[in-house]
Amino acid sequence: MPTKVIDVPKTDPGAYNPGRAAGALLQAQAAHMREALRKRLQEFITLVEVDLTSFKTEADVSAYIHKATALLHTYHGRPKDE
Image: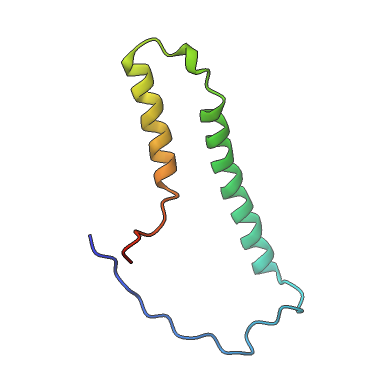
């Protein structure tokens, strides 16, 4: 499926002031981002801590690989030809 390009207008040059104190909205956004990262981190930790010697069947390995691949696919980069 082709990527849809959405034009976003340029930000006013004076809109960003790196020295200005962060407001409540930015602080809340940072807190939400941290919580999202924590959730993903826990998913990674859970998969990494699995004892691979506990897999006895192809179904066991298949289920593990399915979960790990699904999680990793959320972090894919852009194709090299773009």
